[in-house]
Amino acid sequence: MGELWLVRHGETTWNREGRLTGWSDVPLTALGEQQARALSSWLAAERFERVVASDLQRAIQTARLAYGEPQEVSAALRELEFGQLEGLRWAELPEAYKAALLAFDGFQAPGGESTAQLRRRVYGFFDRLPAGRHLVFTHGGVLRMVLRELDQDRFLPPCAVVGLDWAHKRVLFVRAPENGG
Image (tube, rainbow, N blue to C red; front, top):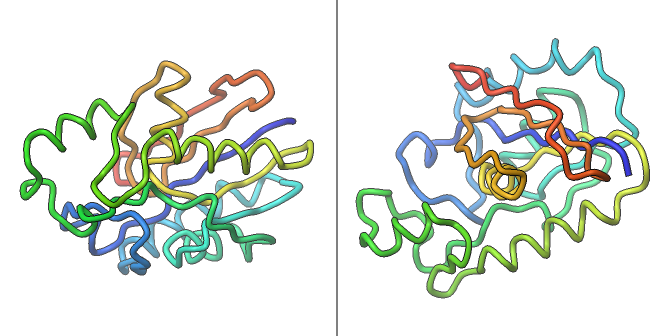
């Protein structure tokens, strides 16, 4: 298969407000655009066979600012769908949902998608990619899911990058700048 470089999109208003942001199509903030641009000099030195992005504008905008126009956009790369919890602030969530989200495995929001469904959707997309190096603009929940399964459970800031040897399910690097960009 080769390498996957997973990039979390830049900051959105909902990220800044601590809102659960799944499939709502919120744009980047000015800071989010700056974070994406900050990646461009680092990514410019790299070559990828394919650049793909979630079909949500925050991921597409990040791709355009950080590297260039994605060759493919796909709903398969979206964040977890939070159903009735979508848009709620962390502080507004009942404790049971907070605990379940922190545990992650087995979580499913009412009217939303389960983490198992997220895994099937995202990994199905990854497994269909041709051999080579791929740059993938996606979401924080996707990065966390992958890292959890590779024994590195972490919450990463906007514009963090995770390099993977997908064939061997191994983390190559995690670039998580302090300022998120």
